[in-house]
Length: 290
Image (tube, rainbow, N blue to C red; front, side):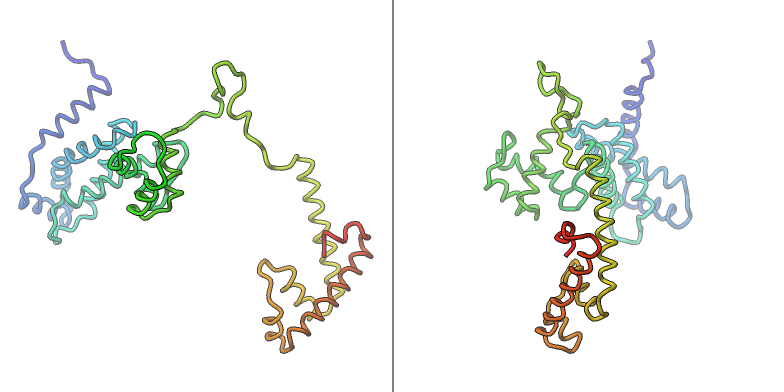
């Protein structure tokens, strides 16, 4: 009786066929690469990539511990294999299998990083290295279970060139996994984790009020600034309204006066601003403006 055709069956047949593909000698591999590179020979490309699908499958098996489907890993590795074939230069003294191995591994690592968790993490090279090497280093230190000690965190951080806080954070993420916010806190509780999330933003009424107050302050301050002289406005802008306030000494050098003169002009300008704002809104709103 014939074996039913299922996804698992098809995957097994594909793997068996790939593992039966003949190995290539260095000379034949070079010839195929030259024919594809220089003449665009699709047949040569097919033979070259088919021979190294065994490399894709072998590498995919090393990433199965992350809980992702073997078939998806193989597909991603095949994409990396094709990218390697596209970029391989036969003139370089290196075997195609050596060159392709890097592209295959990189494609699978990117896939794992995108799909291991619904929370995207570790986009940097250092973070990626930490993600894929933490378990190996923990095993070497005899610390596969439980929390890392300060000495263990330091040893891993030094070896991978990352901060100790990054090691601790990644260890917690790998140990905890994802959790749905709608999951009950406990078996006998009606509350879910999302019920415990605090919204730190103000109420809608407060947000609207803050926005309107901000617009009023901007309008009043703009009107008050118009009562100053150009030099006074320049000093107030540089000293009071800039994200990086300028020093009295720097402003004095820029204007050709002493820093004490700048301080005097600033105090005079602040006094005139207060009077202008007081005339516009009264004493209550004065403190929030100058």
